[in-house]
Length: 251
Length: 291
Image: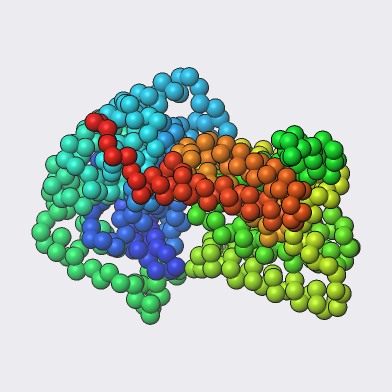
């Protein structure tokens, strides 16, 4: 199996402090990978690095032949400004960016595809509703509709099920399972270990450094989860410069 | 006084009133949509800070070349664009946020401008720069106003998608395109351009009013982005006409009167506005819908 994304000794962080430290490994093409770990473990940072929105402090992320627009990214819902007057149809339509870019028009065929994506997440009838009037679950469905339109071979999801009811979770999991069956690569940051155990064959347990990466049943063993929980959360402002890189600090 | 005397005669009889009308409408077309974006990006006070940053540039232009439109425009543009660029640069490369960076640079610009003016020892009448002269717009000034509003609308159309997406979902925009940063700088440039154009008509400080007051007014009446633009432009044009007529009949200074007229629209919307106005909040409809 070829790799969709390869990580070579990657360190990602902010202001010279690493949030993800010396991560090596590869995400196989068609993988269904869960990323778990305590708060502040660097999970969201890792996704930002994978999508190219954050430059590594050290090491290198090899995306192979994947273009920037072939990686779809679902940011945390909290990063959205829901007071902005934009409706569901327009929000979902931004998933066509890969084709339309800055100036391209939205054709009649595109309209049909947008309607189809909205129907695919069960939001038909909500097209002209402002995103500010949606519930958390409805908004997440709309964002999944956008992912459907993006039609990307790699899909990165940052906490897709935060504060979402069981019905919506199971609907969205069905979409993820469909992407997996279509041989797309899916990486999801998750907190609910039950969901991870049920739906994700492969797991990366992150606590700034990789604690374990492999089959989910191996990775989520109690002693490893305990080890991950022992991670110090605060940055140490006086940490010495890290040995393994010339560039980053150790903590 | 007949309605004709009150509302049409001043424009029919006096060329300077017609020119003022054309200038104010041109300014409204460009500045109001800019104001809507400033408001939605939570940068409502940025316009005000930028106006302070531009003022010294225009004043220096005035000192060097007298009451010359090109010199004052150029001075204002240089000061405004430098402050915008430095602010953006600091916000994106250091830990200072945009508001703190902007506050620092506009204060520096203002202090530098005032110092330069006083060093020159000239007691020129800066009232013109401060409060504008909408009743004395010459061809040059009208061309500038029309040109700026044309450039503004075209540029807004070009950067519309990244500008909107950077507000709604910056994480997503960064994942599909690198245009967010560029769109932001172009947008700041448009803010400066409109303020520089506005100081001819309304004065540096009051030019912000025709940008922000109609935008804030629109928030109470429209729920969609297109609706916001329409209501904001309509309000700005209506306030311009009302302000011109009132100042003609009452003999009040024109720039402030236009802004006060916009203020009346704003205050009325605050009370009666359909979306979140005080009345709709205080006395919500007693019966709710079944679904």
